[in-house]
Length: 94
Image (cartoon, rainbow, N blue to C red; front, side, top):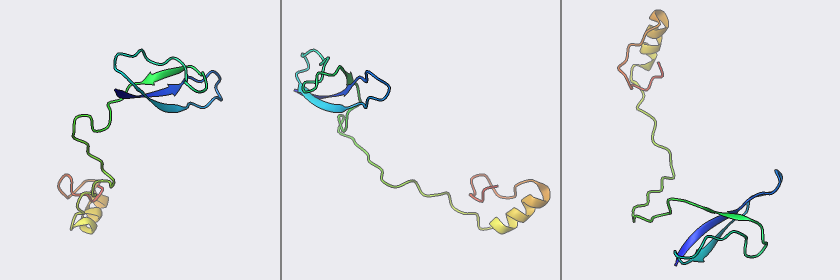
């Protein structure tokens, strides 16, 4: 048995979409109507969660690049010449 995700198909622009799960055999035909309300539905195809046994959940953003130690000096040089005195990826923003 597999768990499938379905969503209702709105009949008007203001009608909200409702999402629900249904446990079905892989041989069963997809549902066409919500089992409780009778509203038309479509099956949502997803990659699944942890299907391949490798699930990576990241809760924090990656750290910012390191700040250039010569940022003040670089900013002054950049202002004068319109250029950039640090190496690429220094993080000084110039």
